[in-house]
Image (cartoon, rainbow, N blue to C red; front, side, top):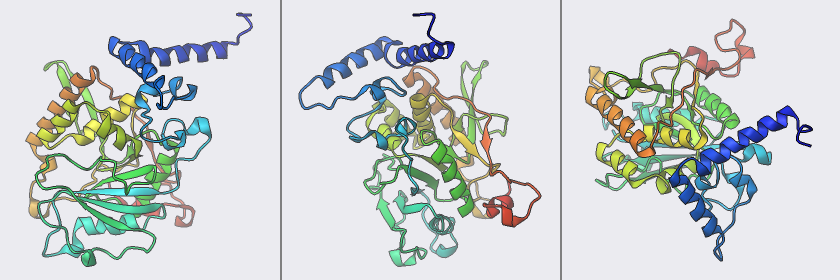
Length: 361
């Protein structure tokens, strides 16, 4: 009977033992949490998760039942259920610098809102206003299509806690497009990235890529933005991800990680990459060749994102996060996805994303 089991089945069973070991038994901490979860499910009035959750990645410890009562709302079980990740997305634009009073209509934020509003897949645009300047009156914002609501959420002044990844009730779609206010994406770039995300709903899919590496000389992890053959981070200044990660980020991560982000006023995008890679054990996905994704400051002013101290701070965060997680969850990839006819010498009539051809690196 044992010999009658096919080699393919044996391989699948071996792979499953690795999943169970990694998720529930590979450390004392996981054994304790697994035991507590089993006890909790046996309590009266507590929902019990079925075998699909326990026996497939990311496992019951990372599938929080207080997020939803249906598995279709989680990014991990869509393939097993034969479900679709959704045909629309919610854009969340995080604003720190505000809008210049002199030329508001020409500001990068307004241009970004217009580009996103023209997407055929957008359901809603949410502005998370974290600037000390008050937001402009609603009448001064770009004219929106009737089918695309624009909501402005003001973060409490001096709260110190970023609302970028908070699970806002306004975000009802599975897909979230996270954007910085000075992002340069065109409508075609938004649409193409969303189509790619629909095939990989459990991952971060976006444009700006970064890498981590081990520095032998310093004995610590390093962070780099150099253009190389691989990457391990896709910054959430221009990226899609599933809204479940907002819930995990807010309610599951260690308070020490939140405190690190709060004190540094930095690194929340790196922390989100840590979280998603830890949950999925897969790298993010970069789309197209775009390197620069932010508007350059006027008059040659130095952007805070190019400040050397800002960069050093991000390296410090990288090592702090790795210490709290207990290992380095980031995984490298050398895959980049482009439209099939990208840069091919064919008629524009045969291309779906015309604007991407015109975007510089």
